[in-house]
Length: 237
Length: 235
Figure (tube, rainbow over the protein chains, first blue to last red):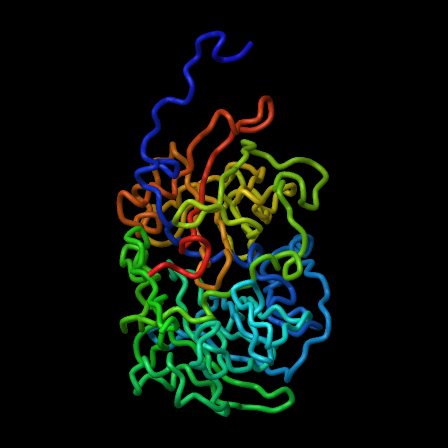
């Protein structure tokens, strides 16, 4: 017998909630909290060129939980492999042990994966997606392996260029919403003319420019200061 | 000049980075103003449609994929909804990553010291992908509330963490789903970082049509990502 047939009411008038048409709009951000390690970072997530399983903190969840850490192998990647390393620090200079970093970069030719970059004169690399994710270590540090991206235009069809860079998102306990920044390379061409760096007060620009601190693979250091003295420049999108 | 379009102002429902009642924001939020930037190819592109190549296969039933051979303990629930853009258009083929505590309010995380039992049949993680209409659906256990150290007698309301990539770097979202009959929401510093009335966007609706007879209670929760008509954004 259906509920209609026996005269039951349907759902009563609800209080304002997710389904209220008057409230329709962007879903608000909420923090990832301290326990994201077994849900978000995957083995290999910090290695965009394939090969290693860096990125996850497997010491923080039981071994048998590896069901979510089954990223398939990827093909060879064109371009020069680089390492991007750094430490996340708080407003008192202390390392942040429960942060997570995501990166998004163009391939070595300067082409982004995905439909929004439909330039046919710049080649996609089937082995390279350009997205990475890493939980920081107990000492607040991260290490990505990726390729040094090529220069990219501001927009498809535009004739103004951006210097090689990688977009960075910072998450963690105490971060209600993601902080967005960028890493540029101290030894790359075009930083002086980059239209985004030009919007950053000159005295703070250095927080976005990673020095090369090692070779084999070339290693760039991008420390992130969330708050206070030496604070990294974060962007409003 | 088409290449200097601004982003629209932030939605009034988005919380601030600094919210003193959530104490750990004090040393982890910027003091300098955010630098406004125009839309560039960098942020309007993203790893759309690559979730399986990146992370591995979907897992839509959190009650069954743990190591144990039995079923998870607790109230079985189905969570279903749509992922939309700000014009209410569906966002297809985007990944929703899920993690949560078990029915007793305990995470499998090694740093979770809350004195409540672990469930050998429940890890509390999964991931699903939206279909062509932007719909997603997963089965889980209703999580329990748990205490935390923010202030004396602080308790987190029952919640499910949801993480979405969306079509672009700029559409990234991590949020928490709350339940409609939970009195802890209004005294929770993390939920309260979202101003009224927008906080209610985070409260799922019980739905008898999503409820599976003799199986699981149903909740509906739509997720609205930044942007109109996918990307790029209208100014």
